[in-house]
Image (cartoon, rainbow, N blue to C red; front, side, top):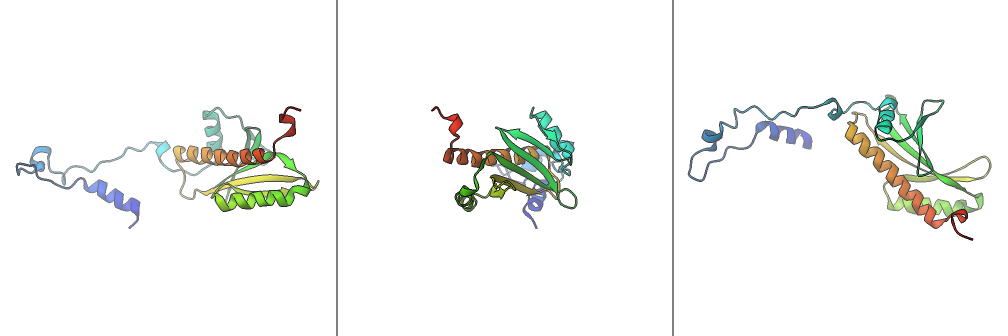
Length: 190
């Protein structure tokens, strides 16, 4: 029996019958706890895990006042703190949410080994986001990160918000760390 099945059974059974300090059963005072109807939680549609869609993603962004775009392939993206993020739905039933971010600057190919070491250290110390690099055709190195979550059984609005906030903030922490290691000369006074 799983944990949630056990919790459900305990709640449905109600509290155990206890006797008052003077020996009178509480059932006589409060009614028989066994015969009481089990507590029922009223679920609203927002409390029920439902499949994730790009429409739900867009509704979440709109609700929170975030600016976003939809590209030619239907993928949702946006800029957070000057960094490009995409929100992909993968899997046979679009049940996997992947939040993928790209650092707003790029590295010269000569720094590839150094950037790979940073990614390896990050990935060894942190569970997510997963950090990696991409070398473009022009030889420039881009730092990318991603957080993927399997939502096969659906997601509530609250869970979706938590996932998106966590993915964006953890990714921003990675990018802020790299900003500290490689300060932008244009941001510094001469």
